[in-house]
Structures are given as C-alpha cells and as structure tokens.
Amino acid sequence: MDIYYIDGQYVPADQAVIPVNDLALLRGYGVFDFLRTHDGSPFLLQEHLARLKDSAKKIGLYFPWTRKELTEIVNNTIQKNKYGNATVRIIVTGGPSRDFITPDGKPRLLVIVSPAPALPESWYTEGIKVITIELERTIPGAKSINYLDATMALTKARDQGAVEAIYTDTAGFIKEGTTSNLFAFYQDCLITPGKNILSGITRKVILKIAKPLFELKIREIRQDELYRADEIFISGSSKGIVPVVQVNDRVIGSGRPGDRTKALMQQLQEYIKTVTPSGND
Image 1 (cartoon, rainbow, N blue to C red):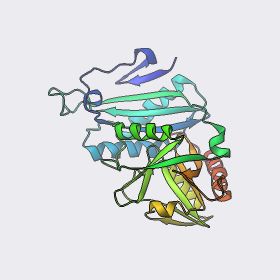
Image 2: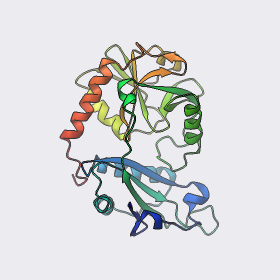
Image 3: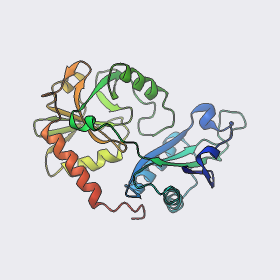
Image 4: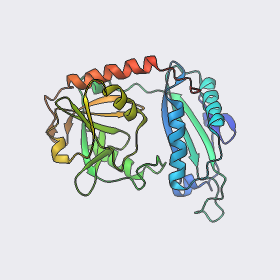
C-alpha cells in the first residue's frame, strides 16, 4: 500500500485524512505541484518546489517550510514507497478556519506518491485530438488545487473524443491546456504562448533543448492561426511531449506526428537520462 506524508506523519494511504474544517475541502483553497520520478529519483524537484512556494505566495497562503525541509520530506516519502517510476503530488492546504472561510495561518503539507500510470502508446505514435474552450485561470501563475473549471473542460473534451482541452481567452488567443502547455511549429519556427499561463517545468526544459535546433518565439497564437500550424504538441510533467494531430474538427498538418515533434520527444528523453534528479542539487 502507498505511504503518504500527511501533516507531519507518514501513514498508509487508507489512513490518510485531514480534518473537515480544512479550507482545502471547504473552499478549494490550497496549492500543489506535481512531478515524476525516474528510476526512483525525482525529476527537477527543486524547480517544482520553487513553483510550489511561488504559487502559495500568489494566492496569499502562508508557507512556513524551508526548501531543505521540503526536499527531505519528499525524498523520504519517495523512498518509503520504493517505486521506480512514480508520480509525486505535493499539496499545501489552507488549513483550519474558525469562520470556515479565512485561514488561521496553519497550513497543512501533504505528499502523495503513487505508481506512474502507463499512458496509451498511441498518444505518442499516432497523436491525439484536443478541443479549445473559452476559459482562463483565475490566477494563471498559481497552481491552485481548485480544478473545477479544468474538470468540466476535460469532461467536455472526453465527450468529444479528445484528450485535452486548450483554453482560449475572449479575444481568441490560445493560452494553455488544463494540465499542459501548448507548442506549435510553423516550418522550423517553434512558437508557444507565454502570457497569462502557468509556466510549466517541462515547458522550460523544452525551450532549453529546442533552442539549438529551431527558431523560438514566445508569443500569442490566435485560434485560427493554430489551425494552420505544421505541427502541434502539448507538454506536461505526467505526459512529456504528446503530438497533437487534430484541434476540434480540424486536422493539423499531415494528420500524423511530425518529424520536428518526434525529434524533440527524443531530445527530452535524452535530457531526462543526462540530468541527475537527486532533488538535492
């Protein structure tokens, strides 16, 4: 059985509880971050911890833990579970509230480790469909636990045979997915939105490994422009790089994963192998 870290204790998953007066439950007030392990080691843990703290700052959530304390807790939880490839969710809840709406300054820390699920191979070999939906995050730079909009958007995507829903603003500009960032190739130029989005850790890696290979532009993309892309892909910690071959009812490029996207997929795998993700660097 999985072992979780819950507010100072390591407990079996079936004993993991928090009080019902926690603002995470009452109001959806809290932040989290999500990462993968490879061969038992967390990938880019320090970057994820920095984003977690920044998310808390953006929503005004008290964050008393040091980076050293968090690193030790996360690594201990990973070691207690002994999975080679796992997912790690680090959650900071709003904590108890006497009036059931404003925090008392006593946040709770949770670390949940579980085996990494096997994603469909067809996503990577054949590509996926995504849909667009007019929606924006309330605080784009904060990774909040409030995923009501994302859950509804993903349900709509699944109903249409799509894997992901891509947010657009009221002006028709592409933003990001519910759990991913978006990239588009126009010949050898790689473009990704950079305004009012959650800056993904995997997104930053892709920008780094793509720089020697392609021209890069961080700018807004209109939805009608997206349809004319030669190649599109989404990225995220749980999924890596996933080629997109259909947006709504429009086929992208040849309708197959493109060579440029496949080259970046290979580069990302090589990067993961070369980086030592001990969490302590």
